[in-house]
Length: 463
Image (tube, rainbow, N blue to C red; front, side):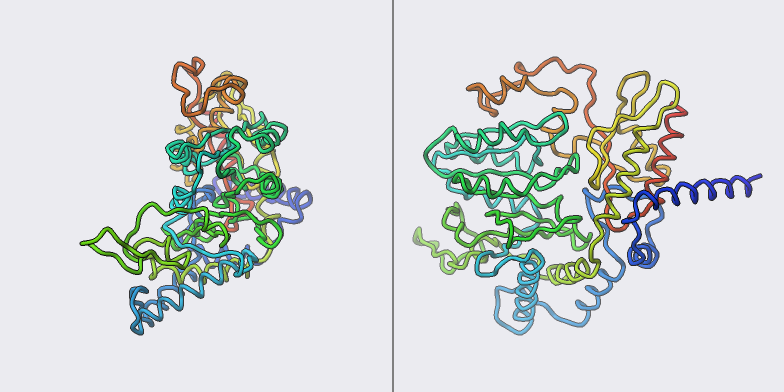
């Protein structure tokens, strides 16, 4: 009986998979099929948290370890041979990053940081001069935090709303960009190329639209780049924060800010540290900063031992070729499957639109949304790894679950975002505090989403 049950399940899977391939022929990719088998031998479950972190291949880690075993790298702030070797690899990687983004090295430069968050923090030096910071309601908290810096510099901070479909309200955004609250000082507009919450892709056209209206633009590419191409010869944001572990899993703790060289003039660095100065005196209140852009903003010693692995990772990404169609096809299958699942009075509510690499959902019992952490814990025990929470993106969470003031009060009145207090919020007792997010990358295949759907059916049946 046990063998028969296993056989029946295999037959069910084969039938569903055949139907899936007829609907999504772009899924077929023998290179990625082999990669899953040979490069991810430690993966014994379903990893569906790619927006949280990518997974490294065995060969990427092994290649970097062999390099470190065969080479001596010294602190790049010195001039001896090990130091020169480290500096050589760092410059090679800077060039590889610009090449990966098709960026003109005469126009753009790479500033290494510990991740996308520290890359965004470089904008603490942005000279608002009483200007304006414009954010979208769909932004990671690492971006939302810029408002605290902006308001301390006398800038106006404003948000532009998102729709029920978790897309930008384009009419309002056009107005915000066309009629800024402040007419003096510099104006900075920041938005994500891809939502880290919903997975929705936001049009890159907003970069050019904003720049034509006199705004500097930071395009948050941290969640975008793992599955999408960014061509800086076509779209030209002024600042682009990146975390490399989100692309290929290793190394962690290294990111960068890709910056237009002519925008350094809008950054007035407020302090100095080791590695970013040419001369400093203790007896005199005197120092001379580095004049070269990236050297001036790379405080301390960058991770010279890990940076060579980024070069390998970018080469690996180029070799993969086109794979987004495969990822969106499996996410679309899961989206459709979860929307259809219903066991008695239990069901799944899917929040985002179909067609990207992410599915955001909640479990409903008797019409009420359950605590998302319960599903995450049960799934984890079954070897299925999805994420629960607000994903450091409170704006989307507020839109989904009603944790916000009325839009007309928040976005259109004289109340500034940082003046809002708890008394402005509607009563929220009993409302959910987060959702579930399944996000996918090149490691995932159809069996992953099939297992998630089957597990969800069983989960609903035992509630």
